[in-house]
Length: 84
Image (cartoon, rainbow, N blue to C red; front, side, top):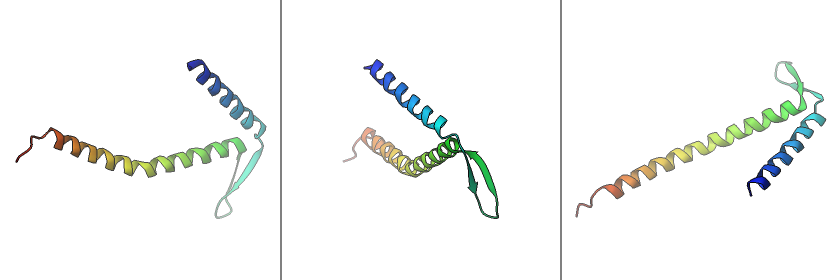
């Protein structure tokens, strides 16, 4: 099973590497106030993916912290002796 997973990873890596090599043309990113940046298309795509991943992790972080607090509270309540 591990060999199959590693083969799949290698195939995905080669496919993405080939995509990056084929899309190495320079693109112009235009910003406000007539500013622009020239960068390879593969780098722009990678930056957009990384920014999206960061936004997704940040959005999930608040929920994760709230769930950890709730779990901690429930564990403390489970350990405490009942006072009846």
